[in-house]
Image (cartoon, rainbow, N blue to C red; front, side, top):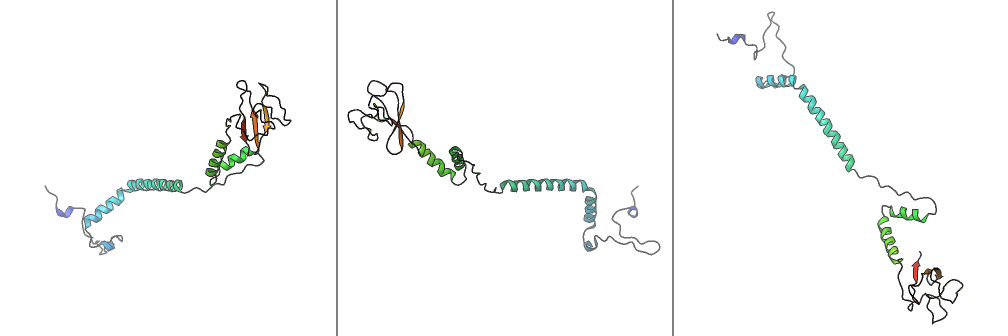
Length: 190
């Protein structure tokens, strides 16, 4: 037997109490009087049962916001660090500090590479050596002992002596390769 319409428990209008006092309506939906009642019921059901989903959404939002903040902090430009200049007279430390400089490091590296390139030992022919101070024209600078005393004898085979040349150069004469030949190596110190 089918149920009567009078026994339904949903979608009923407000009832009057037996003593004549009317039930107060919901304060929340006073402005929604023209809205469909089925929609209002579904909204109430969703609010009642969606607390777990709401908490999950809030947690995801918090995670997304923290990740966003981390990304912004990583992308923020770091402050320029001034290089710490070493104390003391150490030339090596001064060079390293100059190389590590943010602005001057590139130019300094190029300058030092050029300086290193220019200060490489270059072999010179014994007859074409105008830089050395030799008094006699017959013997070349590489075959003499061009020391500060200016001895005129030939260099000994295993002894390497330094000589003073023009333009702040210091020459080193290695042992002769064969009889009568030798190479003068000059280094430029800055």
